[in-house]
Image 1 (cartoon, chains in turn red, cyan, brown, purple):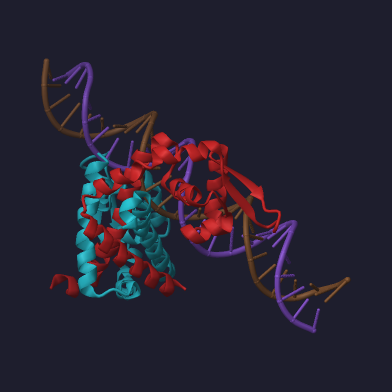
Image 2: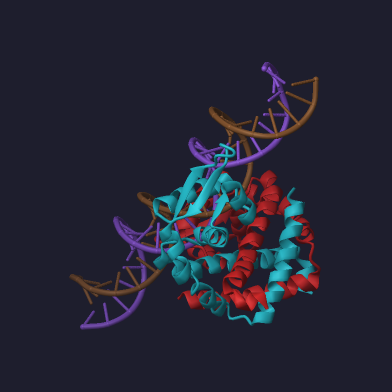
Length: 148
Length: 148
DNA sequence: GGCAATTGAGTTGTGCACAATCAAATGGAA
DNA sequence: TTCCATTTGATTGTGCACAACTCAATTGCC
């Protein structure tokens, strides 16, 4: 089989597929989230906040696997947009607590329409999506271990 | 089932899984490609060139689904690193032809060791990888159509 | 109590990805 | 031949992701 004869080809196809899918999803999210005034990474942050209402930057980083280099400016923009407030924690002054504003909370309802449209855009059935989630989860865990 | 009750959750898990996997792959590639002096997107460009030896920016863009905003500076850096040469096409002066240099060609051999290491790092079996490639390919196509 | 080590957030630097824009070149229609 | 719509790649602007680094606060040990 050609693929086994040429690992460069397989590598390209598998990893590029993940890369390309990620970017295609970015594109669809961009279209869906523009009216809400959010980018996809910002939407991910908001998802966490809609669930918990207040988190530290550290907790956000753990939930989304992002470091403060990415989160700090991103949260700054979210704050500038009026969706969140950032405050120093009283318990530990190194920590910054992020809270929803009324505006940020109000985004939840319109945002709740986005997922159905995204899932539909994938063209995949639910069983396929569930299996995909499982495979990617295992893959990411293995990759994360391999990188450390 | 909880997932069906809460599409925000499914959306997060499926699409975030793709996003997270893509970033985890980026991380592993970064580790593997540093010694070659390449980033992952640059590696993708080199892959195309190792196959065809000379392509236009337009062709690269089509192969990798990248526009000139991304490719132009990326190729500039590859040229600065001595791996490629960029020249205006004689047949159509709007076009720029990208060619490998000797240095760029010499990277092919060490680069050929990378894929096996990446595939191993995924922790997945070949059949799983092949199926994953298929699913992601279909998904990307659907997403690309949905975005247009 | 004092100090070394650790932690959490912010900053700097680099490269990437996309939208919008622009200038020069090209191809096709009139 | 002329005109004009389209094409090609470069540039500008914005946001993201990571590595390396900085600074202040906190922790843990002697």
